[in-house]
Length: 382
Image 1 (cartoon, rainbow, N blue to C red):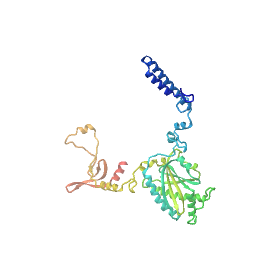
Image 2 (image 1 turned 30 degrees about the vertical axis):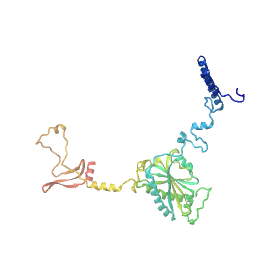
Image 3 (image 1 turned 135 degrees about the horizontal axis):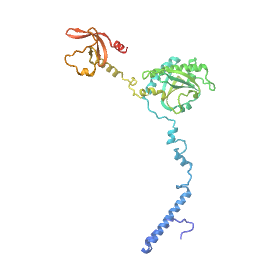
Image 4 (image 1 turned 90 degrees about the vertical axis):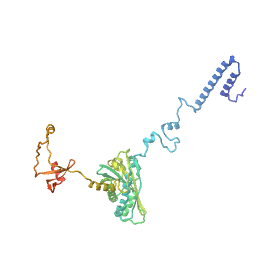
């Protein structure tokens, strides 16, 4: 017999009964095997009940804890960083996955070179402009991430009938103002926080933005001519809303350095603004051609000028019923409205090229050109 303190192992007892059932006579074998099976079933029910009491096993009426709820909802299992996965990451993600526009890299590289020259002429100082990166963001997330104080310039793309946004941070504002107003070189620009920008500061920044927009027009010109015009200057991001917050946009970050001074400049283009030239921006860049191969264009133009074409001298044209045309016989005469002194038209296919008087040159029939194609088209349209 086992001591009262030791727990009784139901599975061991069931196995012992099963062994005893195998060693008895055939008359009692079936009853003992049935009793052993009943003991095994009872042991399984007891284990399930103990698991339910401990909370380790599944139960239809058991309440889920916070970890299991977070796991079902798609939150991170550790709960430390608060990141989300699954459908929540798709809905609330601040990153925008959008098609790549290869030509934008080339356009803004060209803009960097042009800005370096134009800003040096604008400030009469040694300025270095560099391109940090080009990323895709949501417009609302970008407005919330702008460090204040800053100036936001809204500009309009006339040909595309939409807007863009340019942000100048406070470091660059104070550096430009200091340089333009004769600040001492070699010293950092003085930053005065806690006050709004003065009219002089806003005017100087507006002039700088106009210079940058002119360079931006020049950068886009080989691809698609567009005119960027200054619209307004804002200091509050809420008043610089040019697109809906969830809309995707292209963010271009520049760095402007003037010896030990400088700051950051950012240009933001909603994808709706770039939609009119989307097909051009998807082109592959080939050298400095911006998607065009001038060598092939020149070769094609040269070969076109050398191409042989057939010219037809049309004496006159007339209209007759189909039945009369089908009944024409050899020897019949067709009358035209032309006289021997009237001009005839030389055509290439169905396009009139030149016209002139018909005559004879030696043993050949010749046409003396009197009118070119431009006059023929004008007469046809008139």
